[in-house]
Image: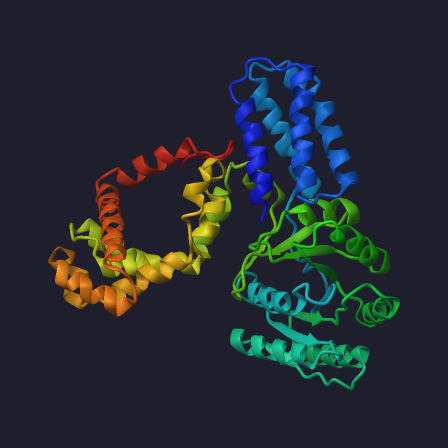
Length: 454
């Protein structure tokens, strides 16, 4: 998400950097480019107008014109206003209520409510250490009931029974009574969606809200909706006392307009965003970090948090111990690192959080393909244990056998060995005293403002 917007705004930022003087004319020219970039990203016109006017007011004041580095100051103003547009500070689930805390999910059909219900349940169970239960009130789509039950089984969460012929209110009330008896901390209620907004749907979800009195009423919206997101968000906001928004499918080819519009239209915070199909792929929404990502400054804090949560610490400690004893980094270690990378969402997800990636040439970005991780792993899996430990033995005949076994070409095997060689050299530098600190200091110049090196 935000790829096109990020590219456009990164070009604007590049032009501004280093400018010793800004006038009203070149500020207007810059804001015209910003306005076009936002409109192309499907941000609603009223939101664009309000944003550009707010930046203009601040830019023409002493905050920018009077500074020694006006270009950098204007970039900071744009980032601050992007952050304000999306909600200033990230907000989580409100647990300040008598358990079970009821979370009601609402949205159109196909917006990703059922999957988001399971992802949220897993997140609350793992990160907040809450006892969670799920229930589906979608009596019109039996597949939704089955889907939620299957997902609940995968993550080890109770899913209370639902029947296609029952009343949604009766299902929800029975589930709430059962959650109380079992002393659950949270009950997440998945509701029925429709292909379009209609009064019957709104009446049903209003009745569910009245019966459950949920602490959180989250509006789930597909981030690929674009301009339609504004109309849909407004209709749900008028019908229900929403407390927050969940953006889904943000890993897809979305322009990002929904994320920048729904907060402005509803006045409610974006609390979470779905960043992939996997059950762990739900992240808290941090407006300041997303704003930095849009402007090509990366999102190092989220990357650090993801590494801490998803990297296998035992495996990392094992590799560190090997390196500290002077033992080499072998192909099996490389294979393990590829698997860790896949667990973190792949190369595309990682690149989106690294500073400066928006400025990379298109031919470089287009070479980033998560399928490549699968191909590399297959090549290594086709090797013998000796070959993984001692890559130097890999001559022409062995490379041909490995290529045939992995369904690849000998050139692919050679490319992997070259990448492994580069990784091995980097690991040798890190293993030396002060190596990691030197590596991090080299990255420091690419980090967004406000993130100090520790």
